[in-house]
Length: 162
Image 1: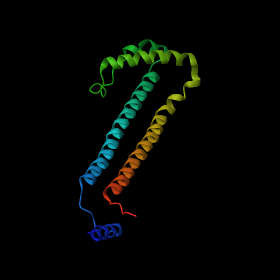
Image 2: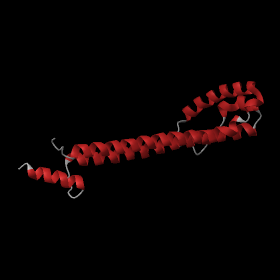
Image 3: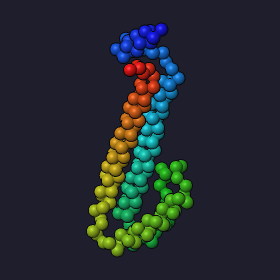
Image 4: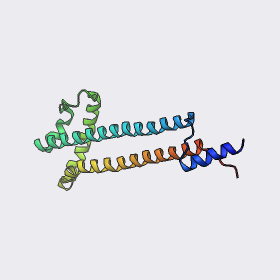
């Protein structure tokens, strides 16, 4: 009776025999799929967030360029909300954001032209940060995938007694 499990273990180690599917291996497959689904959902959320911030920054830079700085600071609270943004964000949140921008513009107005080049670098900087965060999320998903694979092999393969 002890010989049959040993033969099956040797055959399984050589790849000639596959142990029957157990509940543990099904759970590990589900967890691997869950890791990648979570990665995809977080990637979409992160990409959407960066895209909205890039569009808002671009919209704000165009608005600043089309109006004198004093007019923008005085009228920033009354700027109309972009039409593409209205289904996605509450208008009161945009008003709070505009009040914050008024304060930032006041600071920028005092800083002078030294910060003028910052706007041209802000959107590419957002996308560089997006790329680094995406690489971190991808590395985390790969680590989770391989760790789950390692645990599923050690849990499903029987231990050979010494």
